[in-house]
Length: 166
Image (cartoon, rainbow, N blue to C red; front, side, top):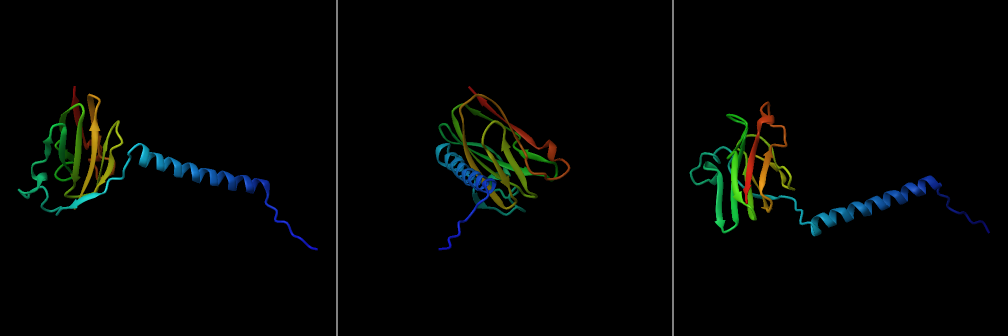
């Protein structure tokens, strides 16, 4: 009787085991982040006309800023733009500690990024699309927000601040 045994090199077997373990660990990390820590991927909230979003009187981005919708809950409408100068409008927001803020961010010109330092808020800002993310600010202090996508020669000066008061 002729039997052939399959032989796997020990180094190859070890690499296969290592790869399988890494895949399981990555899947576990994503699951813990998504379900256990509440990390979510921002999705487009709505579409807008990038040519008129900043000038349409019915658009909240014609007068961007912070609006209280109920006690402790705010909507922040932020416009990221490269023309006429690289900036976020408004550049400064002030909220009380313990507040929940829904950020609605769009751009009339080019792609930008929006990251709030020392939080998990970080998303793309695409012309014609409104990106939305809600975050709760429990700790008083100053939180800077910056552009994380290269948007032109003034990219480095695109920043703003959120002041959380006690």
